[in-house]
Image (cartoon, rainbow, N blue to C red; front, side):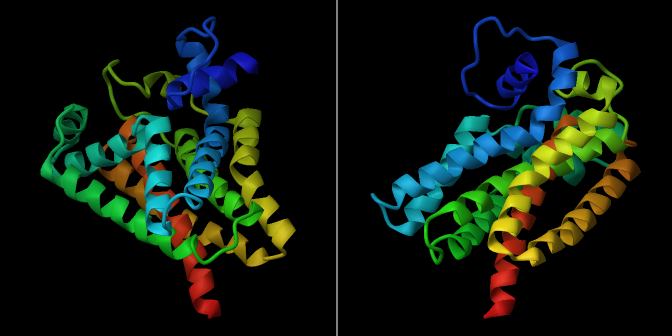
Length: 261
């Protein structure tokens, strides 16, 4: 399990790992179980950066530096997938065209506009969500839950859909070969939901479980979209899923505060 964890950490983040951890397709496939747990780490870094920056800067900069920290620690891995998906589905009219565009390292108009709008929504959502709350465990759990739940949704797509590319040149291919099912999927689900369940139990706000509804709707729509155009998913699709569902979680928290005012 230690090796699987560090393999996931090496693949999904820029954080250092022990030197004896080497790249392996088999280990990378099995390490998918830790994908939601990586969200604990990324969310914790985002919260820690925000908490520290509130003592040094105004809230606007604290939120911005928090976003920068999460982008840096993942190497913009998921943001890149979202931008590629925008370019692919925006400019392609067939499966092969879409896959070819998504594989291109250059950023197009659809990707630039889509990523800019996504980051803007995320920034303003965090600005609405965070500065009004007292710093503490609740803010930390909201950070962590958004990152773990969004990665869990992406993990369920790995479990539910086939891999779309027929070639071998993809970062997600090792993950796709074995899929995810059984106990690994159960463990990944626990990693994905534990921060939210902790927030629900400690705060007593069971309404947070209603987040399942928008998450399920987004997942269902994305899967239908991927299936229609690609017949499955790609690594870029998973990155886009993570980014979109992370934003949806922030918006869900905000909507609960908004309707209770």
